[in-house]
Length: 202
Image 1 (spheres, helix red, strand yellow):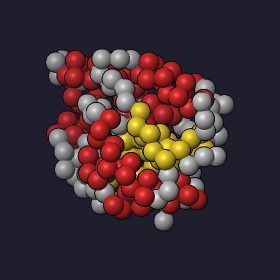
Image 2: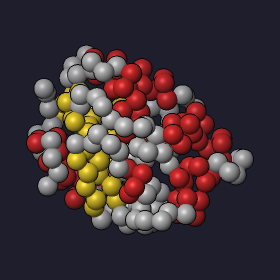
Image 3: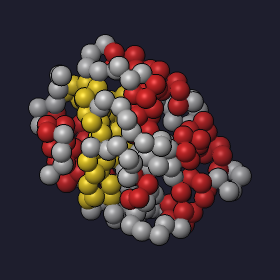
C-alpha cells in the first residue's frame, strides 16, 4: 500500500479546508491529495462514483471530515474491492445526524443540505468492509447544531459523539476539538497519523 492519502472535506466546505490537515500528513511522510466535490448541488452518488474512479487508479488511505466520511464509506460499500486499507473519519455522523434532522423540520433548510440531506439523516448501519476504519470525534461543544439536535451527551457543537460510534469500527478516539476545529487540531492530526501508520489510535 502506498503512502497516498485522499482527503475529503465536509458539507458546505471547499477542498481548501483540508489544506492544514494535508500539510500535517505530508510532514509525517504521506502524500496527500484533496478530493473536492459539490456537497449540496450534486447527489452523493456523483461524488461516490468519482471517488471510486480516483481510488482505482492506485491504492490509498482516506482521511475525511464530517459528510466526507459518509461519502467515503458509501464508496467502499458500493465498490468493496476498491484498494483502500485505512480510513480516518473526523467527526463524521456515521449513525445519522440529529442536527440535520432537527434543522429539516424547518422547511427552508432542505435547500441548505440539498442532495446530501438523506445520507446525513440516515448514516450507515454498520461497517463490514475490508478497510480498517477509525473515527476521531470532538467534544468541544462550539457550534449551532445543539440548538437543533438537543444532544443528550457530549458533542462537538454539530455532531454527537454517539453519532460517530458505528458497529464494525477498528478504533475510536475523542479529542478536545469542535467540529470545524478538528481540521486544525494537532491532537487530531497526530491521532490520524497513528491510525494510518498502525491501524490504532494512540
